[in-house]
Length: 178
Image 1 (cartoon, rainbow, N blue to C red):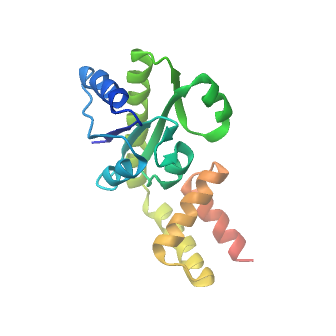
Image 2 (cartoon, rainbow, N blue to C red):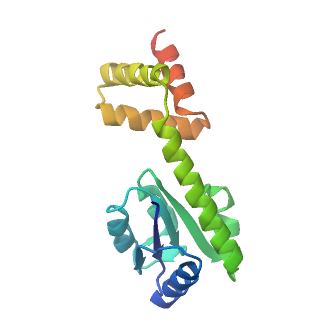
């Protein structure tokens, strides 16, 4: 099950969002007032959604987004003015004043997407897995990476290029065999 963590500088705002989500059958794992509290809660979870404001006492949402582990997505809630400055950030966002229906629908959609990604990760065929393993071993051998670093490298390049993990692994194999 995906976790829901809410982080806003004012605890009242976070609790209001928690209450709305609770009325719509969501379980909120934690309500936080700082990014460090949120990260502490997130590190205890496998996957989920972090709902937050754009500025917490200890960091901006952009810094917090960079620190999110795989399996976690961010839902930014801020004024239209703030959101217009970060349109191309790739972060899901909702503008204030917040519509209950928009919030509930967005959280449901994000949860479904996380579940699909997790399900797709587990369903690599043996052939696909062997391609990924070959690319990782090439990266480990030639770039002196650990297996987890090589896997992270493939994931990062895959996301940056907008390709799936298999295609990225095939590109690495092709490029490194020249």
